[in-house]
Length: 268
Image (cartoon, rainbow, N blue to C red; front, side, top):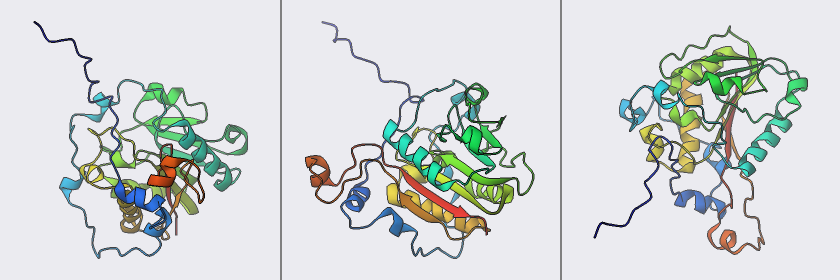
């Protein structure tokens, strides 16, 4: 008899990878916090990463992978709401903002279209960027090929990057460019979860856990130069609290939604 039909696995380009993280579970139990990671870091004297750390399973042209518009959220609604709330509390009115690795949404509060100044987007897919109603302008550019951003020095008060730093194969060059286009005192705000397209994420990302990701991003700020010491904060929605009645979160210290961490630094 022929074998029963099976449901085919989705193509690798559409699957999302969520690495397990026992260290992060420990963090949720209070043994170590996201904020602790960058509180007193011990940076090596020299850039500690090798070329192989930035290799990917799929080294084909990024333009092929990102050619099809993906008008979906890459983190769950709770994490999106937490990020939007964070932006509302931390970004000052009238700020000029650049969103790198941008897409069809930037997760800014709706009133940013009235309260903020220039809102530029730089991303890989023109069709997605055209759908982003929070932008006043956009540029299609692959930062993995050309890290030089098409903006003058000291052009922005804030640069944002949402769950995308793990796809950058030249992060040091990109962070230096962000530092260049920021005004003095401006801030680079990165948000990061544990979701990614595994085939396009850099190797070191897939081999490390959530807290190590925070350290890696913090190191990018340090080695790029021109930034004040980076800080990290856990804004994960539904974080377990003391006395939490949810048996899963009480037993395992787990948030019931996507984790979300902010790593940011000011231009010195």
